[in-house]
Length: 210
Image 1 (cartoon, rainbow, N blue to C red):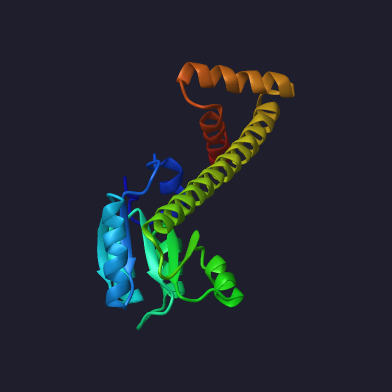
Image 2: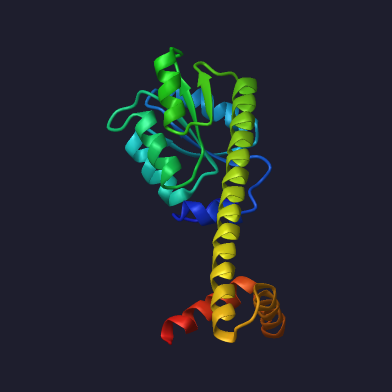
C-alpha cells in the first residue's frame, strides 16, 4: 500500500503500512550499478520503480509513482541524493536508503540530517540489499508509530483544554459546581452521541455568540 500525496502528519498515522516494502525506486547515474541493483531487487521479488538517472528525476518519479521506499545514490547530477532524500521524505513521506561508495562520517551525518533510514555501501550484494531495506523499513514504521502517538497525545491535550473551558462556561451560566458541569457535558455527549470534546466545542462556540 502506497501513501497518498502530501499531508504528512495525517496520512502516515492513518495508513496501514505493509510489513515489508514492495515497490522500490532506484536512482543512480552509473549504469552497471543500476543493473546490479535491479537484478538483486528482482531476485528478492520486489517491484522496481525507475531507474532514475538523477535526483530531480527521482523526486518526480516518486511524486508520480509513489514507491514504498527509495534507494538513492548520494552523488548524482542536477540534484544529489541527499537533496532528493529531503524532498522525498519531508514532502512525500517516502523513506530513503542511501547506496554509495562513500562511508566517511560527513556523509553519514548528512544522511541522518536528511531523514535517511538506511545506508549501504557499493557494491551491495543481494543479501545486503535485503537486510538494508528490511532494517530501514522497520525504522520507518517505528518513526510512523511514534509520530502517530505524538499526534494522538496532542489531540488529547487539545480536547482536555476544550472540556475545561466549556466546563467553566457552564459553571458561570448555570451557577453549578465544577463536577455538576462535567456531568452535564457527559449527559449531553451521551444523548447527542457526540464526543465530550465535540460537545465542549459547541458550548464554547455558543458562548462566543452571546
